[in-house]
Image (tube, rainbow, N blue to C red; front, side, top):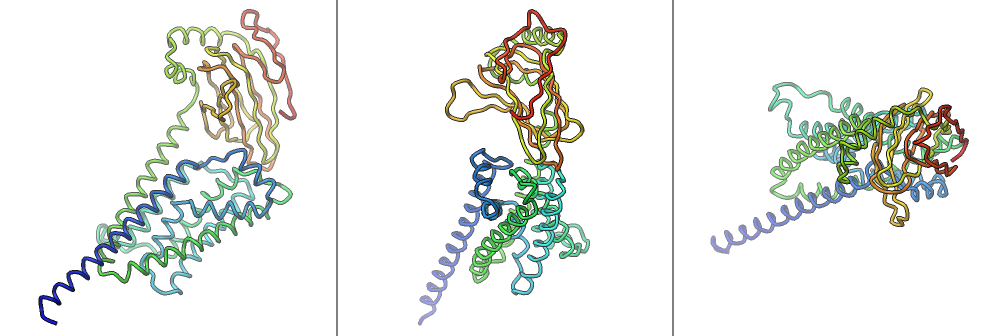
Length: 404
C-alpha cells in the first residue's frame, strides 16, 4: 500500500471517528434536553388521577413511581453521570454509586417517615450545585483553578447524596401516604428509585464505554463536564428564582389579576379599601387530617372582590390558592398564590366567574386545623349563601366542616 493510499485511509478513519463522536455528543445533548423539558413540565406537581392511581395500586404503584421519577430526574441522573464519568473498574463504580445510594436512601426514609419538610426550591437549588461540583471535580478544577487539594470524594458523595434524598422526599411526601402502611410505602418508593438508577446507570456505562474507545474522548469529556458545570449553575439560578417568586408572592393578589384582565386598578383599590373596612363576614374552621389534603371554594362572579385571612394552629401546610371558570370542561385552573406556610392574607378581584379557593396539603403526622376569615362579594359553595356586602353581618357566622 503506497503512502498516499495510507494517508487517505487514515483521513477516512479520522473523519469516521469524528462523525461518531459528534453523533454521540448530539445524542447525549438531545437526551438531556428531553429529560429536562419533560421534568420541568411536571416538577413538584401531581394530578388527581395520579394520586388516585397510587391509592388503588398500593405498594407496587409506589415502586413504579419511584422508578419513573428517577428515570425522569435529570438532576439526579446528571450527578450519577458525573460520578462514574472517569471510573473504569467495576469495584470503583460499585463503591461510589453505593455511597450515593446510601446517602439518598437515609434522608429519603428518615425525612419522609418523620414528615420533615424542607423548601423544595432550595433543595433543588443545592442539587443543581451538586451537579456543578461533581463536574468541577472531574476536570480537577480545585487544583487547576483554586490551587487547593479537592475534598475527599467519598465523603462529598455521601454528603451530597443526603441532600438528594431530601429532594426525593419532597416528591414522595406529595403523595397520598397511608399512616397504616407508611414505612412500607416509603421502602417501596425507595426500591423503585434504586431500580430506576440501576437502569439508567447501565445505559450510561454503555455510552461512556463507547465514547472511551474513540480518539476524541478527552476532548468530549472536557466539553461534557464544562457543560454540566454550566447546566448545574443554570438549575441553581432557576430554582432560586422559583423560591424568590413563591417567597414574595404574598397579599395583594388582586393587583396582578386586575392588571392581567385590564381592570381599572384605581377603582379596584378603592373597592378593596371599602371591603377591608367591613367586619369578617364568615369564619370557617377546616381540619386537614394527618397526611391528608382538602379544598375549600367560594363562588365569585367576574369582577367580584374578596378579602381573606387564614392561619393554621401552628404547622406549615403546602397550599395553592386558585380559581376555576364556571362551565369549563378542559380542567383549566389559574393559580394566584402557591407556597408553604402557616398563614396567608390577601385580596382577590376575580377575572372570571367561577370557584375560587384553597387547596391544602398536610404532610405532618397530626391533624391540622385552619381558621379561615373571608369578607366581600362571594357565595359559600357549600351553603349557596348570597352576598351581603350592603348589609354586613356584625356577628360573623362560623361554619365548621369536618369534611368538604
